[in-house]
Image: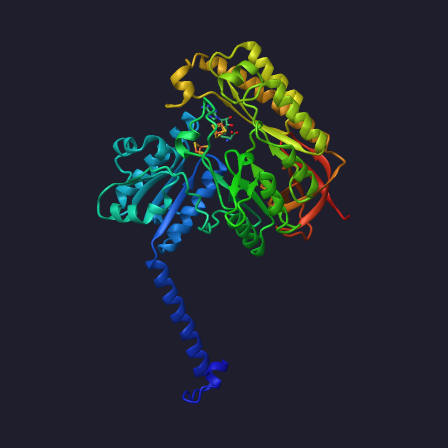
Length: 481
Ligand code: SAH
Ligand code: SF4
Ligand code: F3S
């Protein structure tokens, strides 16, 4: 209103002013719609580990610089991307099924481009283009900066492929566009690749050599997230405990303990989580740093894979059963309130009943709050595929897996039962799936707790006293402290 009132060249009465204003707003809306419409749209689906989800946010940033906008409706997309996982055969099968769905869309909309990103792109390289005729772009995890070139190539009607693995790329200067996010919790990648060569694992081949991201860019990203209202960061890497970065200013080497300490200082109200730890690398320094900071969550994902020293040796995990159990004891000694979770593989090459029993007993000793459990899936090119026979029949693998799952369910339930009566600080993340009247968030130990909504907001810290539990969730009531 002021604008018109103070403009001497426009001699308008009140109604005319209102009309012009409305016309102006209408015009702006039309213009916005027009520019929105002229932006190309991309649709991205991610599979596999958290690192892949984090990478999709880097890809989204690169696309947004090109003027692309994200869409949740694949029918509206000019570009469909699928960020893939190769860890087990089933993961690749899922992606192939999704590609059939995208192919159907492309048959209707010839201008649409389809790109395969991530580990399956890296593993299969050109073969993927031969097998999947409607795929236009194949892009490995270290080549995302090349996406604009490959899109241009594909728009010209050629196939675009870049599966170059780098020794340096960490995308440290790219500010990720947060996708499908609750605005409370974000992933921050701190390193890429893996040098461990576990004999069953395809990751060193799909993600290349291990390299750590520059400390300052990590801290800057965490500050920026906190400034935007985020309350939790999860530092990501295949093996976070081997983080190592040399500060060019003073030639000092920063390790994971130092990094954790620095991130913990961003704000006492920013929670810090990390994943994944390798039992051989997690140090006392890291454990003491965790214990010293309330905002570093008391939760460690420490995959055991197997409880048998003989199998661990074959897996090339570089620790044995006794060493692993000692590590668990050390964690509990330094942080008695720490929760530990694991990954377990059943039916690895030559696994006997005795080896399997060893796995069950390590699980009991470790008192895991949760585990991800799999049966062994042979992956092309891995050490195990080249050296050992995949000799455990599928039925036996599955029976052992069922036993492992049954035990973990009991352990999780008992773990949760012990929390009844305790009060936890919870970061509120979302409305509960079951009821609009309830909210859900995690405690430091990474357990989901559901409680009545009251006037609490998503992103708040609240105190909840646990009153009940299932094997998967705790329930409780708000208390003031
Ligand atoms: N870097 C992490 C996890 C990598 S992959 C770590 O070292 O712990 C996640 C999990 O998938 C692994 O921990 C392992 O339990 C499982 N996994 C990897 N390769 C597998 C295979 N060939 N068959 C079945 N499970 C596998
Ligand atoms: Fe794979 Fe082992 Fe590296 Fe984990 S540490 S990504 S299991 S090779
Ligand atoms: Fe899968 Fe690659 Fe992660 S193989 S588990 S997406 S590193």
